[in-house]
Image (cartoon, rainbow, N blue to C red):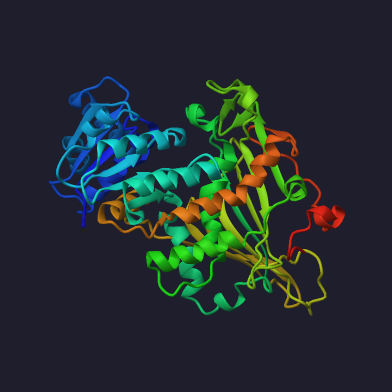
Length: 475
């Protein structure tokens, strides 16, 4: 059943203005929304409908200027606004009131999700309604479990959309397409041939006005716990029987369950955290993170996070998975890099400058490239060669695809409840060890490559050094 009513809580925030409104205009331009569609925004500002429509038009002009003007005007025309406290059932009820089902989008900080879901339950939703939650889902494992319980009392699991816009990106979906539709890749998609998979989201952007949210979350929760772990799932999952929501989600869950739990020793040697200091980045001066407006230095929030994971599975034992993200870095690097092992023998009499093959899925910009070695000017001499293919522009932006799925009731690109909990299980040992300062808070100048490289972790694990920490089946 297609829903034609969307209610956005947090409707005056950056997410709504920068992403949701342009996504709706793109859907309208593509013929996916008709004249019966309506949008109700709810926020703390004491605005009325005309004031919000003016704001909507300004946001669409700023962030959706490339979209047809008539599509932008159409979205603005069907928009209304109500001031509402998202924790008060009566005010929430006024936003969602009506006989037709409504899709409720929580464009809110995760800390208020439980209170808002509780208010929605008390207010009551029309039958067939759906609820959409932004990442991160909860603030820790216990919070995710409790939030899942609250949602189960509100709507069926299929009506819960824990969205991650990374899953709607063309290149991210092409990870599956490249693997599963090409016989040349799937037979070598395992630890016998792949030494390391690096999943990176490095950006030159600093806080850009998001300190009020970011300083409470940090890089690990903002990016690694959701976006990068979702990419890990698509890279490492077993081939599903179909791309239907049950088969795809089951295989993603298998990957998260296979992640070897990190001990304190692992966290100390296989994770890093850092935050930027003053520097020059992207042609602008950036202050120390702790001097940014709305930042509380005592929180010790990281702007750079890196973790190395291992999967205990038949396919992947012996392959390293490195997940990394950072803000205010010297260059944007957003990709999944699959690094293959070296060939067993080279008959060229050349043992230096021979690089292993790397298959790269570029996320922004969206492209696909393969680094190989080829013969150079002489037959016995090797030289690196990069083969690159630019991806065709997507028909819809990532948020457009997600909203289309929400309105149509297709949860294939949303995250199931048990999957959300399992993702927290992966990162909770890191959060715990970081809270106890088992990993130092490093620093890096804004505009640099991040914290300086460090020596590889010792091969021996802490269970070898401390027998009392041995896990059944551990290495």
